[in-house]
Amino acid sequence: MCGIVGIVGQQPVSERLVDALKRLEYRGYDSAGVATITEGALHRRRAQGKLVNLKTRLKEEPLSGTIGIAHTRWATHGAPTECNAHPHFSDGVAVVHNGIIEISPN
Image (cartoon, rainbow, N blue to C red; front, side):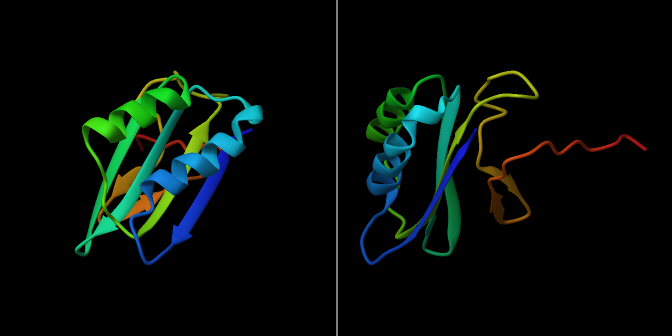
């Protein structure tokens, strides 16, 4: 099962979001990601594999937003890749979900 966490704070939240995901670690996962809002714009970092990979990515490319969401993914559909890791972005919206969403080509 996936894990989802959100924080609305007064200080940067990305480190606290990753800590919260760590507390959900028992659920299993193959990728993880964090999205925050900084100066009205969404920014995200995602990584394939263990949560430590996301922590490393955030050290290399920090996020400073005070509002954010985070997700650990346990793939039941689709390959366990960074591209399939959440949060997904579309038209200025960041989405995390527990389920399967497929877009029909028709």
